Each structure stands twice: as structure tokens, then as C-alpha cells.
Length: 70
Image 1 (cartoon, rainbow, N blue to C red):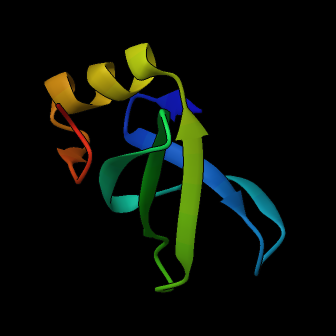
Image 2 (cartoon, rainbow, N blue to C red):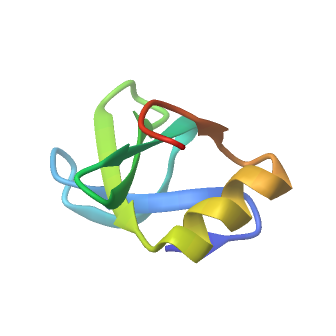
């Protein structure tokens, strides 16, 4: 899910894989780490990831903490 430019996800609208997410925010909901953001065209995107991956993106500055973090 990750590359050197940040979080990538599948775009349901354009049916393409590994689309870079712009300004992702990682929320914790029901124990799951969910990154949500938009692609270059403004379409909403989401990606589910592990705690370690989420913390790595936040520490590198690729994403911001959202709601649900303790």
C-alpha cells in the first residue's frame, strides 16, 4: 500500500490500482486503521492498513492522525 510518495489505494471510480492519496488522514475505527483522502481528480478514497503501517506513515509525515487514536 505504501510507496515513497505516501499512501496509495485502489480507485473504485476509475478502476485503477496504486493511485496516490492526497492529504490522507488516518482514523481508528473499531480497531482498524483507515486512511481516507482524495485522488488528483478529487474522488474520495480509503485504504485499510495495519497499525505499524499507519504509524510509519504518520511518523514520516505522509499522513495526519484523525479520530480514535489513544
